Image 1 (spheres, rainbow, N blue to C red):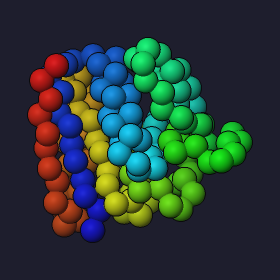
Image 2: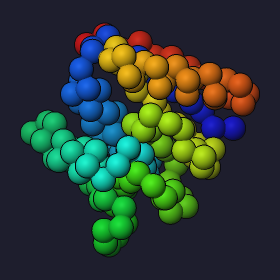
Image 3: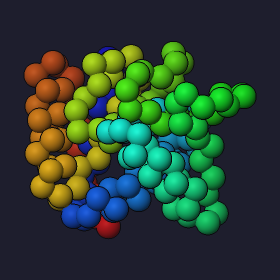
Image 4: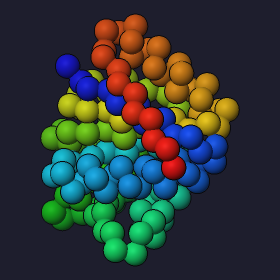
Amino acid sequence: MTRIDFYVLSATTLEARFDFACRLAETIYRKGYRLHVHLEDDAMAREFDERLWVFRQDAFVPHVLMGEQSLPPAPVTLGWEAPPEPGIEALLNLNAAIPSWFSRFERVAEIINQHQEVLSAKRECWQTYKSRGYEVKAHHINS
């Protein structure tokens, strides 16, 4: 069964959420997992793409926006509509909703910060996972 992890940040800004998402993406990549980051739309995907290039000077997370060519396939994909290709083990969901295809991943990560819109959306996600019988773990991150 898919493992669901919620990372709860004390920060209130959406920038802090993106910064933590970049660090988490780097950690997942360095552990050898292929990762898909699910975002709201094209604009959010491009913003996250840019953030991955600059979040830390000594970091490199090879990634590609879905639909762009990458040979060999990049270990991290960014998308907002269709599911990624099979073989990707982890999902980082930065979308307000849970994608219908989330259960194809070994692990799903959700990030909550203290921004009211994010709190509301992710509370609903938490309840949805729980009502479907998934074990949900919370990790409180003090930044």
